[in-house]
Length: 164
Image 1 (cartoon, one colour):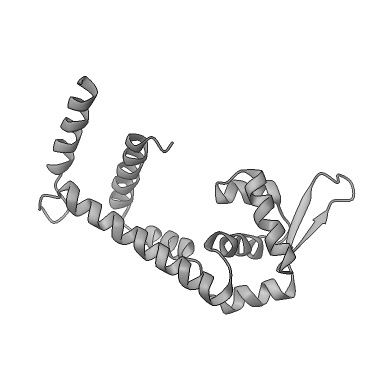
Image 2 (cartoon, one colour):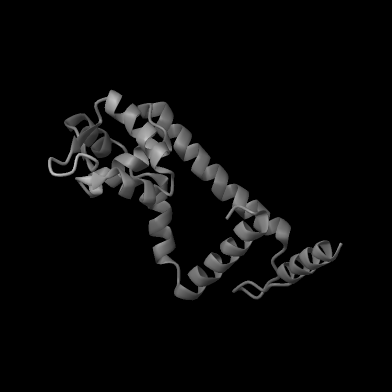
């Protein structure tokens, strides 16, 4: 019961937050904006998958390898915020399609380096930047105070939803 009151108080406080334009922002308006962003990302990923047979994650992996030839599998997993096994399974599919090549280090065979094949380079050249890149670029254009506020708000939302 006490937790519900606290949560309600947080929602009331959030509803009373004032935007930069000096108008009140309701949770419903914010929810609509979050949905708009999520839907835009989903549609973009579906378009890429439909046109090129690649999931958004696979394309993102190709972009990482393109940006850092010789990237280690473990570093790719960290960059994509996925488990090593998830990255490895994704790389299996990309390797089957001859888009990436894995090379083991001669001095330490546990270390696997990733490189794009010519076909992988062709895909990167033909496909517009992934939405993750567009989103990251858009975030870089926000004024510092807006970016800080967005970060705090998203961090709080993620925590409240228990997605940490």
